[in-house]
Length: 528
Image (cartoon, rainbow, N blue to C red):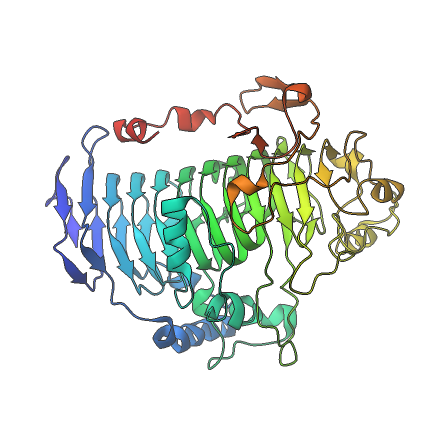
């Protein structure tokens, strides 16, 4: 353990070249804004190098034990068992390190402020970076990469993205353990949902983790220019505070310019309560659900200029031995009940998908504008009807006077039709599906007059190439009035815009967020 009486502001601790099995702990250390403490090791590797195959059974055993205790069978309860633990520290920089085979966690932050993690490579592990504590805030995670499962071609994709700005358009998935060979239920199933208990011999519970996992932290988190490949989840915030204080946490989050490639579950996930999140200019390649917004309350979300492709089905093709219903995906995973503390803007994104947009449930105060969406109907099994934008049950009737049990049952099969009550609107979107917009309007969805179902005509349909999602012609857009947390408003004129993420050769953009523009520390200004 390295404690506060050993290092002072401005000191740099450089790990010697070679392997450091760990664990390493930094405790009660304090740098300053001008002179942070630095831990680095350009030629050092932290961790025992344990492969998944050696940790698999132990992880399943621990998950089964947790399930026997009445809890969800994950390894979350022991995530503080990390290769590098940073506790009660502030103004710390962790950079230029490699973590290898650190199960369950590579880096764990507890009650820390002003921590920067940059240019860190992580291989394996259930959680790459974990953050805990109600006073944990101002975390900057940038230019890192994580391959949770590196049995397949993740290193090739990483090299292509870093050097050429695109993923492999024709990936070979034949050797992919997590993405193709493992059933979703072996990773994240629970006996209360399926009556299937953890199988200690065959399950893969060690994969049930995240690139960045937060447990009820204050917020002020920026995650930018990272690459996450062949993993279960990307960025995941839990907010498990009591109802009276839940609004103090998961505030002010920026997720920008990241790549998420072949994720079996979610890329961006917020639970319980979240406030003022900006998610912009990210690339999502074969992600089961890019956005999981399962908050009870939330507001001031800005999701724009993102690009996504969904061309391959995850999971094993043989469905005879185990139920497998987590293969088709959706763009948004939504809550059953939701209260809006502010607007949620989803605007000027471009997608090539094989699934529904809003498959079921609801999100209040949702403003969906000027998105360009086409369907990938080549290759593997594809059902256009099942991929209807608002779920397979979109034709079912809506009775606003029905009791909650009836409404809840209907919304398990389709996106809500209570648009007026919830403040939901869609307009200016170009979605190439035969149900959109006319048939959906007939079914009771009040889609705006300027939405249309034409083909966006992307320049190409190759997987993972951002420039290909530019359109061959300018797609008309509608006006948008955007309200910020300060209550200032920006009016965007549709005649000066086009639907989709690309505006000519540049991505759509908005001012802010204000907390990032005022991020403390001289090192931040040098990186912008």
